Picture 1 (spheres, helix red, strand yellow):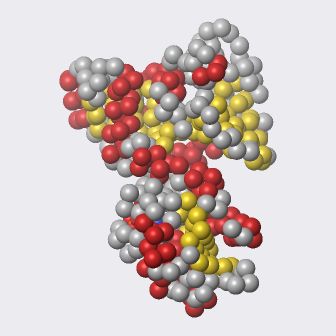
Picture 2 (tube, rainbow, N blue to C red):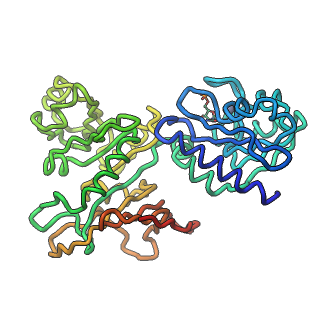
Picture 3 (cartoon, rainbow, N blue to C red):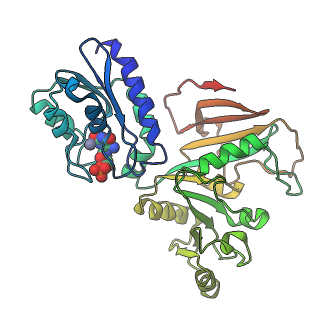
Length: 378
Ligand code: AOF
Ligand code: ZN
């Protein structure tokens, strides 16, 4: 594959990211049309759920210049009638002479058939240019499709010595304002935000994005015995901002009924085991096609998610403070990994300096996996 297509594919990936928070549960997709001189003559992306696909936008921008040109697209063009007609038909009609695809669409109705349809029409297709980057871009989409659950982002703020609170339970605030601003921006593109009942009781949080973001997340409290107080800010705001209380099979009906009467959604898991119930909850969220779930703590819930290998991405805000104290909690409770060899690693994707705090963000690798290079910003 000619190496000179790399900048154009990088551009397509950059365009795709414009759809972040706007296209889910669809994948983020970008496309560019390149003429015989290597010039970009049209570009586009999937801008919003239900809207035109990236190829259609790029072809429209290129107009007549698309004839005989090369189309670069971060995801295999679709060949099915969804909310929009097949992109393969648009590519063929535009007279594109060659297609370069970064990665295949895992969606069962496409998954190789889009490439086959183009080839059947006599258009050569090359696949795999910048595939790791394109795969990373659609990782939440792939997780939802193949695992049937949302992509899980674990977030915590800790001191340099790894404490998320003091021994007496004080935690507001460990990280600075800039870090907290980054969390609000992250919240603003989530489909759901989850905490455990311990954190709900201790912090009385709202779990909203302030200022509001591109989407409004469903707020979820994992609360086996339905102990969430009706006077909590979460319950008080439930009529306006959806709140799901995820309870266990034995939660008293009197309490769940009361929560429902106050506007909460109650989901009653059938599994007695907490871990199995978390899995059940994740699949319930997957059935509603929620793509991104942010888990904000406390350490019991974060530890359980990690033990069950449900954490896909981690955002650790490290504040230059020393809290100390044997009783001061660490971010992850649960069972943990007794053997160091079994401990998942983080493929660090971002190291950012936020007014003195350090954000370490990356994807979680279970077993052997590829570790990408971090980008450093400040
Ligand atoms: C493409 N280009 O830009 C995107 C694709 O409901 P629809 O019609 O929007 O179709 C959604 C499906 O199409 C989605 O599940 C994925 O397989 C594919 N997305 N395909 O050719 C695009 N966004
Ligand atoms: Zn399409």
